Image (cartoon, rainbow, N blue to C red; front, side):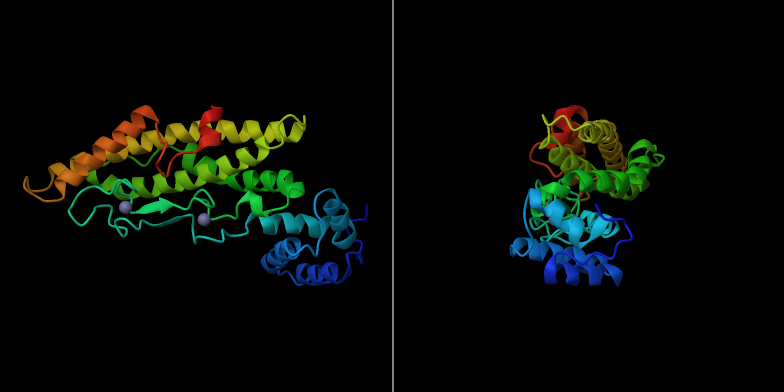
Length: 272
Ligand SMILES: [Zn+2]
Ligand SMILES: [Zn+2]
């Protein structure tokens, strides 16, 4: 084990390139190069990787690598939720019916990253998963406090539609982070790694609270839509889709049957 301040000289040319990027503060570039070299088999895999990192980067740069990989963006999407291709973001179809794919939100989850905008664990080396899980959960903590444990915005009729929509989508994105972390941690089950038990417990607890807040939010949004529909002229063409949406969101809020929607989190919701 090197002293953290050790200059480190191992790892050959690949090690030198990575050290230079880290020392120049180019964390994202270093993370991307690391993944590229790993994919091209320039870096060793599995058990030898930890030894390689120790020799080539040392403890401090490896910690920076974990940070960089934790926030590495999804290769497929921009922000985790993309404009719905069925309704082009309008939430209703051309005929005026509710868009069943996005439930009127106008956006749907990227299935590659589970709506998080973060690169999927499968593209990251398994040896670093425990540290990346830890890092992502630590980073999620403040958002959990703000989006899940904080009460919903006060209900003020139809005006609540916009803030509730933003809150719901942000909760969904956060639940995706927790679900991905839990699924990755579950891959280590049976290995009696105490840290992983702690991380799984944390993700599950937050996920359980998050599901309840999500369902509260959907119910409140449904109510806002009903109030909004009453303010419109009784023959307004958008009323049918608003009420259909309210019905659907209320059903989700009541049953929690999220399968087939952008809100389903199989690892997280099964665990609570
Ligand atoms: Zn849609
Ligand atoms: Zn994505």
